[in-house]
Amino acid sequence: MISILTSVPSDAIDTLDWHAATFIASGCSGVVYEVLPGVVAKVSPRIAPSEAGIQVLLAQEGLALPVVTYAQGVWLPLAIRRAACSPHGVRRWSGSHCTCQQAADVLLMPKASRICTDDELEDNDELTVLAERVGPVCWSTAHHLWDCHAGNIAVYQSRYVALDFGDVSGTMRF
Image 1: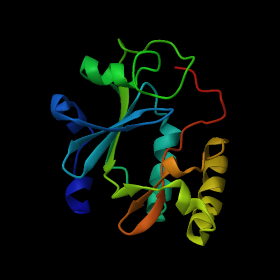
Image 2: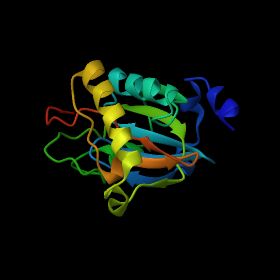
Image 3: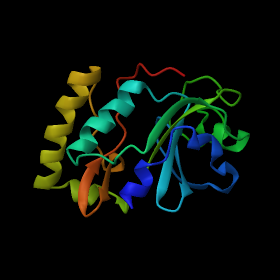
Image 4: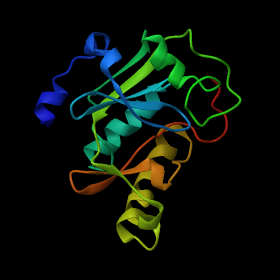
C-alpha cells in the first residue's frame, strides 16, 4: 500500500473530494480527515515546513507516519476551513484569530491503526525510547519541544509512532 501512497503528487491535494472527507480528530494545531481509504489529511491554518520536514526525517527512522505529500495555501471547502479555524471550529487552541476565509496547509499521510491511550504511557519502555529519539530531532531541527502525550502517539504497522511536530511553545499565532 505504501508504494501506491508515495506516488500521490502534491497537486493531487487539489483533486481530492473534500466534500466526501470524514472527520477523524482535532488537536491544538489542526484537524484530521480521512480523504481516501487509508489516507488522512492534517489540515491547519499553518503547518510549517519544519513540521513536515521533521515528520519526513522521523518517518525514515520508523518513528513517525510517512508523509505522502504536503502543501501550503490550499483552498478547501468552507466546512473544512471552518473546522480548522480556532474560534469557529473544533480545534482545541484558543486565542487565535479567525482563519475561515484563508487557504489552509495540508499534510497527507497513511492512517494510523489507532491513537495511544493514557494507560499505555505508564511504565512503557517502548514509548520512553520513542520520546527519547523524537525529542532531540524536534529540538535540533526546529528549536522546540515535542509535545509527548497520548494524543500525539499512534500505532502504525504494529509499532508506536510520534505525531504532530508543530510548535507547542505557546508562540503559535494564526
